[in-house]
Image 1 (cartoon, rainbow, N blue to C red):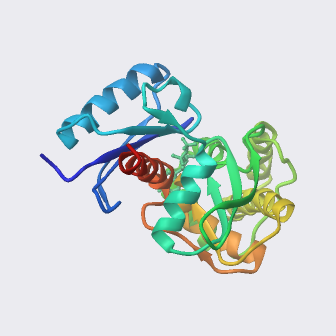
Image 2: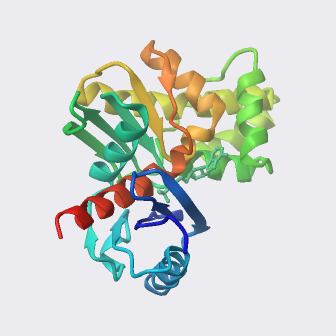
Length: 258
Ligand code: ADP
């Protein structure tokens, strides 16, 4: 039997993550898969694996886009779960920005760890990981090489299209005009952080700024976001797992109230 006492599942639009925590709330196990269109079956399978790891019918809390499809004990919003996960890990409040595959959120976390305010963009792929993924694919680069190219560019080319689809054709035209690819890529990163910056300004910025979600692993996004907001950006360990970790912590709390 492992030390896993409670399980959190974050069924995101792009990836599905699970985290198992021990009785002290430390992450002991995790799993990350691309989200399957047959999400209900995928979540059932992951819950079975997680409970096998736990060696018991450990409580499960589900979050994320597909949370209601899960045969979990409870479903909780991503806002609450990311807030819980990041606050527990960092031990302080501030402005938490979660940039996922198809949405981005800004959560103002109070000094006791509660959500004080939030704003969400889930209507448009610009300002999310999908925007960069589409552009990287168009340029036949993997996401790490794509981020590196932005970091090493001498300047960035302004990308005027705010829509992912139009930005894709703008890239093609700019390359045809002979502009350096690195400058275009830097411009695409700049465009993403500008959109996220506007979302941050809609909630008000409380320092420090923290970044979670898969896109937090993109070094160019981290640097450009810091420049856009004129702050240092704090990234928790395993930023992509913060929603699932927060869900697991909430599942753990349910054990003490039983
Ligand atoms: P969701 O919860 O919405 O499914 P995630 O938080 O799992 O999304 O983030 C998925 C996004 O993170 C994708 O757009 C993907 O390209 C991006 N991503 C994942 N790993 C990396 C990485 N190492 N560098 C840059 N981007 C990454």
